[in-house]
Length: 91
Image 1 (tube, rainbow, N blue to C red):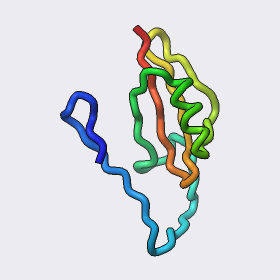
Image 2: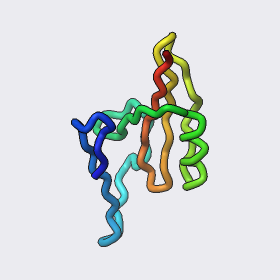
Image 3: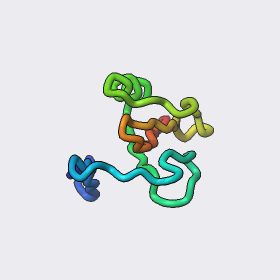
Image 4: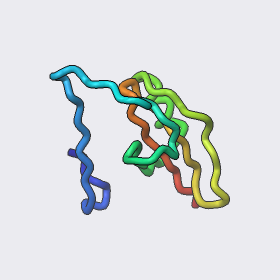
């Protein structure tokens, strides 16, 4: 269980070790596929975070994109196929 920095939110991340995972179709879809397929994390250093995740087998999906003067955003897929969005606010 991970608690948000402000202390109000929590996220539980799980990994099933047994029984073996069952594949589904499509097992890896694009970011705009219907359903709960990702979670967004606010980070302070998006490039540093991407580099740390790559060291653990994650891959950047597409590129890091700047949304006006608001934020940088990207999508990363981990070795288990879970997609995570990262956003870094611009001040």
